[in-house]
Length: 109
Length: 180
Image (tube, rainbow over the protein chains, first blue to last red):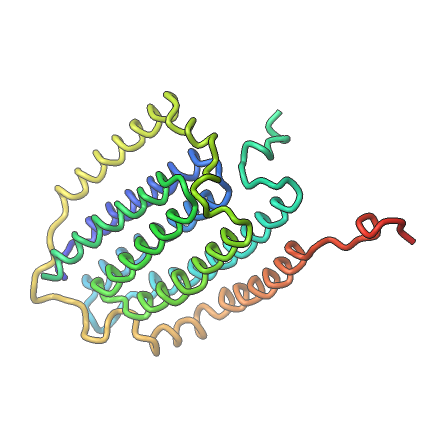
């Protein structure tokens, strides 16, 4: 594949923007969590694009491993975040019978 | 060939991401997210990250999405009738203006970046075994990045405990009636 790294970065930016838009616009907690996953994936993609760029610059003998390493850490954090978030959703549903963010806006006013 | 596949996958990924944001039913959101993750895995593979592509499928599609699916089915939110009615307000005027402003700025930045980009010469490509060979990754992870690795493992343990505590049904004295 000879696609330049900039194209991968643009794809990552578009994905992040879509995820952020969903995060701000949706009211369903589960969909909001999915949008966070989307944003984390965009961050992963940009990390890998940077790693690929540096590897191609430095030559194949010295691959740049920081990108994939931090992408692995991001995947772990995403799993942790999803587990805690969904546990909170279950606790919320048990107390309110709702997963709508409009119903838990006590701190807003 | 590989380039065309990349652009095709990028297109499908963006379409699936839009599906996550715009679908009314949470079930369709999960399925769109699954499509997006699979396409991203193909992109990782094309870019030379074989281990990351496998991890993407295993962890994201195999574990995280199943968790989402499990909660949606447990709370019975998948039926189309339960789509939240307040979501209709997400296309109110300030929201749409904001999205168009941010999207326009982003598209402009993207266009500038793409215009300035130089394609990689065909001969200079990634090694056969990919950029992230597992032995090299493991050497780094258990060498220079041992402390973050241990921190993340502690985080995983704490999460496992926290999730059990959070999701446990509260059987305190108040619920069982009477108390001591």
